[in-house]
Image 1 (cartoon, helix red, strand yellow):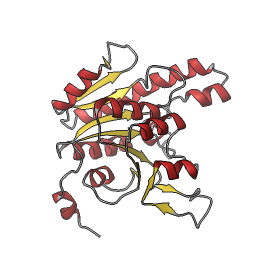
Image 2 (cartoon, one colour):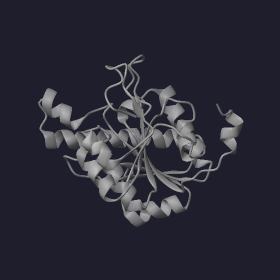
Image 3 (cartoon, rainbow, N blue to C red):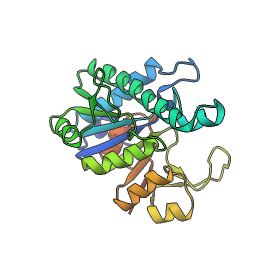
Length: 248
């Protein structure tokens, strides 16, 4: 096992990435907090560690810890379109929380929203987003795609292709992609890497179908890893074998 010092000395192999964080990753079952302060700090420290390496970062954050459009339609009786817009607004709340925490760590941040809300975020304009990244600012992309019926996974796939990212980092609570549910089957096997075609054939749930198709069509690799592992994002950026890489 490599020491922390050896890990610190490694250089990044990516110049520009999109980091996809689910809304649920910011919440805590133990405390019951929708946005847990300790978890938020931990996530932001991970992002800062990558920022300090000089990597250009676009962050797409979900809103499922506050409201999820699909479940709202199924369980709460909210119309799907309305629920999706509520979910988009939830991503803005999470994005502002990340912004505030990162700025307190002296990381320059800009929040860009697909929904117009000029009081709290800039509108998403591709040239503006790339310019911010070139100026070494972390760009937090909120408001989904601005349209209902599209997930934040699809947002990550779309934005990564638009801004010319080299890879999507999908930070989850599982340490990669398995051939079957590891929580149910003790003999589940984790893949170190897998092609888009093989993932499709095996019906592995990497992302939703729209997002996955976008990544496959644009040959955008996806790295799925456990964000709760120590320095996982930094280690991934530096090319260490972590999680599962989905590639063309």
